[in-house]
Length: 67
Image 1 (cartoon, rainbow, N blue to C red):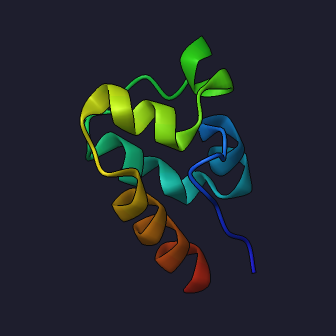
Image 2: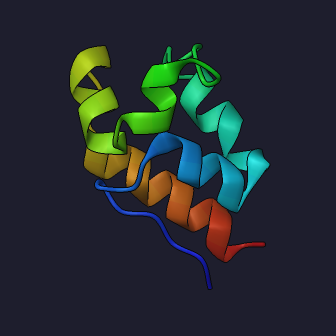
Image 3: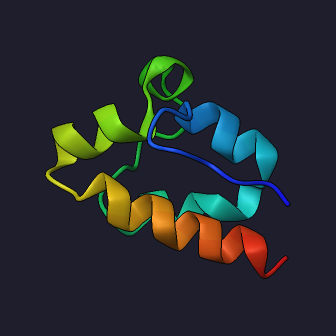
């Protein structure tokens, strides 16, 4: 089963499963194709957007587990 962590790069999560994109979009991370997404971890992006990284990781892993 695929999983992500706070250290997972956003682009890696999207490659793992493109269906993860809406989770990022709904919290204001609209620049999924920009260079930041290629080098920024989920935790770093959450800090910039004022989002709880643990909560997002839990949601993403719950989604991935249901696949």
